[in-house]
Image 1 (cartoon, rainbow, N blue to C red):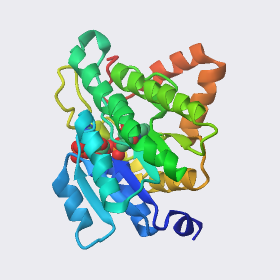
Image 2 (cartoon, rainbow, N blue to C red):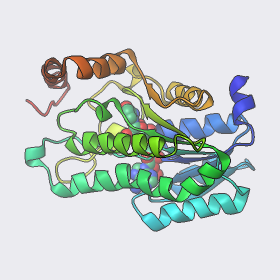
Image 3 (cartoon, rainbow, N blue to C red):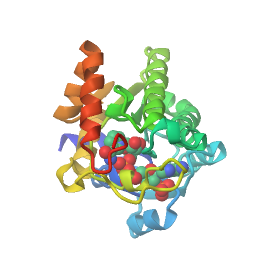
Length: 270
Ligand SMILES: NC(=O)c1ccc[n+]([C@@H]2O[C@H](COP(=O)([O-])OP(=O)(O)OC[C@H]3O[C@@H](n4cnc5c(N)ncnc54)[C@H](OP(=O)(O)O)[C@@H]3O)[C@@H](O)[C@H]2O)c1
């Protein structure tokens, strides 16, 4: 009820809305009466989702392309005249040791995760300032605490956090809220789409996806974080414990992380 009252008629852009957390979030915001702009490359999947729904706009967007991000914002404003919330959710992961890695993989992850967030935020910012709205970045626990075999992923998520934390301070007196949103392990396509050492998709997941938080539950937390205008949200008991350990016992956490990743099926340490 509180969410419906808050989100009704708000114009919300969600990047990476064709799958997982982004799709679940777009559906949730729509169910609360928001005007939702879905952005991703898989336009057919988004159009199927939007069929028969007047308040959903689908925009084919590759967030690593600056012109696409600018067009996304322009199309949203042309349709609804304002932007209240931008959720920078589009993301790509990887799984390979740095010593084996084609450097193009790190460049690709920075282009999608970091630069995608920077481009969309840049073009949406004037409208968000006008509406005294919100920008959110979906990072990860890996944006606080490094994950082996994910150099590009952790780097991009740390970078997004630094970027958004800075934007928050720059606009502290302007009524803009900036939310750094860090899910823990969540069931989605992210691990199957993750890039391997040569840049090809991994195609499988090392985790039991059914045991993870659902994308729908994660979207509910995101909605709560936005409604209450939080500046930071860290999910799952494991995620919270990891961030706490990183601040207080970072070298012990290195050892625990090594042990944890060693237990993954097909671990990079084996
Ligand atoms: N699942 C987890 O365990 C987890 C944990 C922490 C954080 N996260 C973060 O949550 C976010 C969403 O991931 P997810 O778990 O929902 O994974 P997912 O199911 O793989 O969804 C990723 C989304 O990003 C989009 N995307 C990828 N490259 C893109 C590009 N170049 N331009 C535009 N969109 C692009 C994909 O759409 P197209 O392929 O159609 O473009 C898709 O909609 C990511 O930022 C991820 O890092 C996930």
